[in-house]
Image 1 (tube, rainbow, N blue to C red):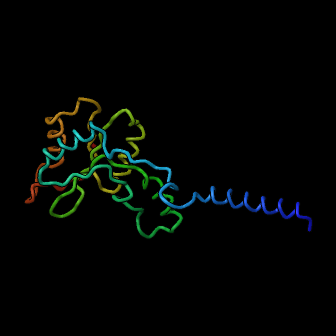
Image 2: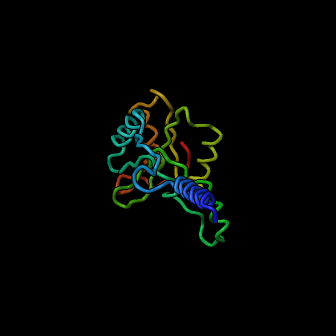
Image 3: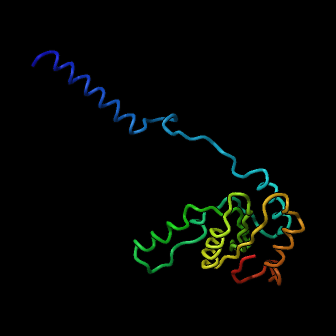
Length: 173
């Protein structure tokens, strides 16, 4: 075989190896093209403080995946369960209020900012209600006050059981 062909084949193999390595993403910290981001906006941080003050008997979680809150019903075939789960598993709930004693989810709270769409929110609320959750919606902007948060949450938590936390039916507020 001619030396020229050996060189051409060698260069081709090196080029192929480089392309495959680039497509694979490489290894090490530089392989992931990601950067950190804040868990909550300043407004969300302010509102979680108001929620925590309004329901001290509860634990408040922020930015919770719907996949952590619900599942497709048992008894469905795998394809159907996956299709149902795909409708919600990547969606996020702004705040989840949890009974500290039992671990039960008491309510979901959504802060309706500029990213919210009324028709999508309505469909989302129907989905969470089907799983048995109450969704409380708070207005965007500076319209959220301690008084408003207490008022919206008091409606869900009255009348209370022995733990100070009401058992309730799913409803949207």
